[in-house]
Image (cartoon, rainbow, N blue to C red; front, side, top):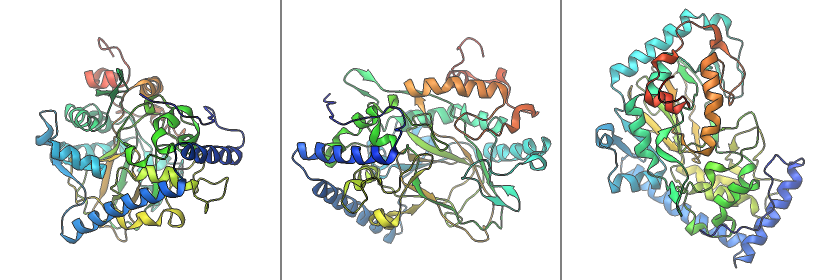
Length: 428
């Protein structure tokens, strides 16, 4: 594997981010020139590719078909996708898995969450949003900062969830040159929160962004090696499904960082949701992320600017620099309780606005975070948070559940749960 890349790097946050941005942008331009290309030509090539993909997306819409791939859980229960399904998911970077759980199971989890928060007087003790991703409705949160309910843990460690993650993980190249970058069949039980949005909600949604990291994507060494083809000006050969070096890359500390490597972000539907009711939308082009890494190198961007990417904020996608992508934004299909929704970890996404929402909009946030160097390290922190009932270290220090009744007990972890939190197999 050719991993040569002649760029300066910072494996800790630079003391001067603007100066580091100037240095790295100049160095990447030189690297691209060293390989016989210009940044203008490379970006033009990327835009030509994107326009062709967007034209296909718009044609699918005109035909009245779903842009998002849809597969049935029964189709992947045997442990694999068809070649056609896999290629479709890899092209679009997202998928809905119908019937991952039975409707009755998902609806029971929804009821259990209500009982859990009500029994423990959550709303009486709610102290307000702990980060910028909370929105309130009638003084109640939409995103509940709880992590250790029975419903969440049962879903995370459920064999059907494990099977789904295992199959989707195989969309990635997880082994190369004799090195296994992650284990597709073993997942960190990455703890995230819950969303419950009631009928009648009016919400402005969530802006278009990504969550894989921020300035570290250009500046830290293993990310530079992972994205070396882009930084040499070879957009055509860039593969967004290659996990090489990403599972060992440094993430800079920040309030919005994710300490884990996720192959897919995801959520599990607990209610019926029509796709016009303020739900997820993505730019369903897996390779679009490569364009975002190259776009700041053009001359219309200030020397110390990375198209608005900053520490401690999500990676923004904006009209000023990325307007070419706007027509591709595509809503998920309608979903039912028990369906799961998945999108590539580098995928551009947002939450659409809604006025007077019809019906509930309830989800469990559960990604796929396969076992690897990075995730094994974070598992130690996850395990300690689980045992104490504290909020995981990737999230605000709210710690509502420390003294709550009904937290998921350690002795009910199954083999998937014990392995996914770094407990010994023999005992939890």
